[in-house]
Length: 123
Image 1 (cartoon, one colour):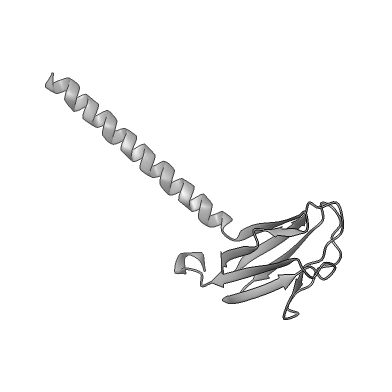
Image 2: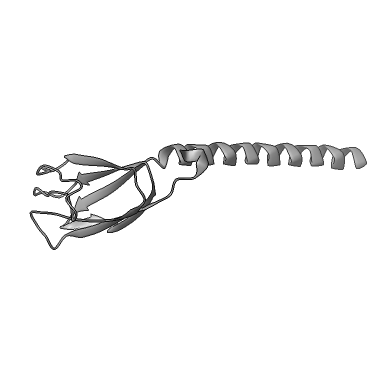
């Protein structure tokens, strides 16, 4: 009986190690993807309307609506061309801050990007 318990303990330890390695790998992939974020434009809205990212992240707006839209910073930091259906526009946010934007064709459409400091590992 002791031998079976010992073997079960080893299997449990091996499973825990495998789970730990899988989690570490998955978190590494999540960090790699943290440099990109997407905002969907559809039905006269930006989704999500507020997005928080780390400094250095590239945000891509993708128009999934059936009419053109534009993405323009309230401070004129960035501005897209008219985006037809399935067109996209990207901007990299290097600096910490809060960035408000809107659709210059439909000014009631508004959104916000909040940029937080990147961690040392992400720099």
